[in-house]
Every structure is written in C-alpha cells, then in structure tokens.
View (tube, one colour):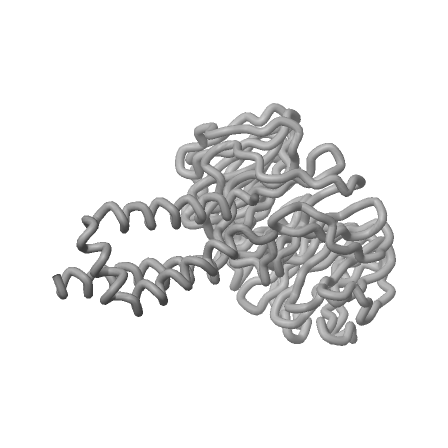
Length: 419
C-alpha cells in the first residue's frame, strides 16, 4: 500500500476510534437511533475515503508540477512545498537506461533515457509509456503536450497517448516553453534563437547571433534571455516578436541565466556571479567566487550559485553578499528547492540542506540531479529513478475524509442535544 494511503487510512481509523471513545454506551445508542442521517452520510464518506486509500495508486495530475529544466522557463529551480524532511525512500523504478529526471506533471515523472523519453507513474514508479526520440537534449511539458528536443529535431507528443503531433527539424536544439511558445536555442548548430508555436510547431520568429551556446533559453517578464559565446554576451529579446531589447558583455556564461521578478543571475567561467537588471542589462552586483560558476536557481531573497569545484553558494539576491556555502566534494549537478530545503548532488549522491543556513539535513548515496514535486524528490540512481519522501494525499481523499468527519461530528452534536 502506498505511504500516503497508509497515513490517511491510519488517520481515518484513529479519528473513528476517538469518536467512539468520546461517547458512553447511552450516547452511542442515541447516536445510532436519532443521529442516523449524520452517521449515514459520515459513514458513507469515510467508507469511500477508505476505499480510495486502499485502492491501487492513480492520480489525475500533479498538484505542484515541475514542467521543464529549472522547474519553469525562468529556471528558478524552485517549487511549492512540501518536501522531504528525512531520507525516506518511497519507490524505485526498474525501467533502466535513465540518464536524468527532467519533469513531473500530470501524474507522471518524465526522464531522459538512451531511447527517448520515459514516463513512469508518479505514485509507483511503474512504466507508463515511452516517447521515441534520438539523443534527448531537453524536454518540457505544456498542457497536454510533451515537447522534446534531440540532436536534430524538436517534436511535440500527446502526453496521454504518446502520439507525435508535430516535428520541426532544427540543428542541435535546446528548449524552454512559456506562454504558448517553444523557445529554441540552436547556438551549437546554426547560431539562431527561435520561437515556435507550441500547438503547431510553426516558426513565429528567428534571430541570428547566438554563437556556440548549448543552454536552454530563459524567459521572464515577456523577455527571452540567451547566453552567447560570441563576445561573452547575454542577449535579451522580446518574447513575442524577437525584437532585440539589450545585450550585455559579461564573459563566458556556461549555463542558462536564472531570473526572479526583476533580476537575471548569471555565472561565468572567470569565477564571478552577477546580477543584471532584466530591463536594461546593467550589472547590479558582481560577486567573486572560486572556480567556474554557473547559476543554480533562486527563491525568496536568495540566489544560488554552483561551482565546478564542488561548492554550493547562497547569495543575497539584493546585495550579492554570500550568506552561506556548502562543500559537496565535487562538481554539483543542479539544485531544487521547496519548503525551506535545497536539494543538490555531488560525487557521493544527493543531499538536502537547510535553505536558510546551509546546514546538512540528510543525504542519499548514489542519487543525482534531483527535482521536487508533491512532497517527493525524484532523482536518477544507477540508471533508474528513485522517489524519496511522503507524497501529498489526493484532494478527493481529503475531501471525503473531511466530509466523513464533519458528518460524524454533526451526528454527535445532534445526539448530545437530544440526550
């Protein structure tokens, strides 16, 4: 039985027992004889809630999805809570060939594999379907569409059926999806940045000048940002039209910029972590950090930087002051934050940090590149997917639980009034 089902069932049964313990035999007789309506409605609701709790795991969707690289097109790497407070393994898949977990949406966990994209059930890890593609570079979920880029094509699949809806040949693309558009960087191919219509794959606009950059675009506030090796620049374009907004020379940026509401955070090879104004490209602050630096996400008043030497840094987003650092032992492989916890991985595996202090909370050997959704951390481990934590119960179960308990409480109240 899945862990969330066990916890809900235990709560239901303990609540039922407490209800019985709060009445003596006479009150219970009255409850049965005169409060039959409340008992019936409450009991029926509790019965169906228990049925849901003991039925096979299935959920219509994901409550707090992680839709693409970086969680969203701004690459915040931040999701809503809850998140695991301890290392509590929930399931491990056995599909094999997994390279990296990329997204959680519509009750499915999507991962890059050697043969395309694999989707497993979010609650059990059971294989649901595969989506055929070449060597996958990036993917994103937008509504009922799964957008996948490989070495020479961007494709859209129907999530539920796996049917391919459209394809567009483009050289070495990486993607981000926002507001009905697929933004495609082909800097390693023909040096262009494009916007496609997510419904049809039609090209909406195309701009040249993105040289030797492989990172997915970043989108925030109606602007698309792209790092380019040409002149060590960051480009800003109008997301709707492709019209240039500004460019800033900052040095060689080695990963996608990260955006909050007004700032753009970039890490450069020359050991610097910078914040730029999204509106103008002006440098707001410049913090020197050891090693090659790349931006790792943002949440609240913090921006995170990662170094190839194996350190995680939390930096004050307004000032650039280093709040704390954590030595992971080797190159860190991405972050994910939720509910006051920051998850990342180093040479030994996954670790969880207190987001405010950087203190180590727990670790899980052999798991890498985590993402977080609905109370679970998902990561790649030994060519498979692991889920760690306790999942959020289904809203339908919680509704029936609340209805049943309310019915029992109402019946008890009526019984007390009549005795």
